[in-house]
Image (cartoon, rainbow, N blue to C red):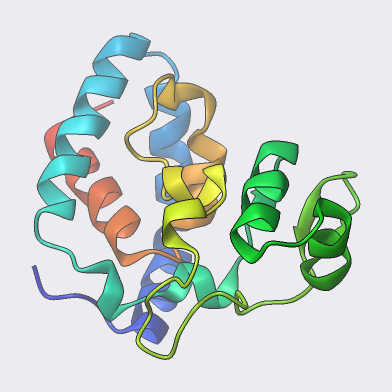
Length: 165
C-alpha cells in the first residue's frame, strides 16, 4: 500500500466525512462481534503494509490522555516525582483529563521514534484503536482519526468495500 500524502489524506478524509459517518451509523445496527471481527482483520491486514515510523502524524498533531498509571510509569522512566512530570509535560484539559501541554509530543524524535516507547501512555499503546473490542462504541473516535492516520483511512475504506452495512 502506498501511503497517502498527509495533506491529501486530510482533504480526502474531509471529502468522505459525511459518507463515513453514514456508514458508521449503519454499522451500529450490525452485531458488535461482526463489526469487531471485520475491523480487527482489516487492522491486521493494513498494519502489515504500513510503517508508522514513516509517518508519525499522530504524535505530531494529537496528544494522548494520561492516566494516573501512565503518569507514575513515565515519572519512573525519568526518575522524577509524578508531580514533577505533570508540571513539566502535562496540563488539565476542559474535560478534566491530563493531556500534553503542547504538540508535537515532546517524546517524539526527528526520526519518528518515541523516546519513551516502552513506557508510553495506554492511549498511545492502543492507537489508532482499530483493533479494540466494542468498535461500535468508539466509531466517533475512529471518525476523528481518519484525517490523522493514513492506516485508519485505509482500514475504513476497506471496511466500506468488504463489510457492507
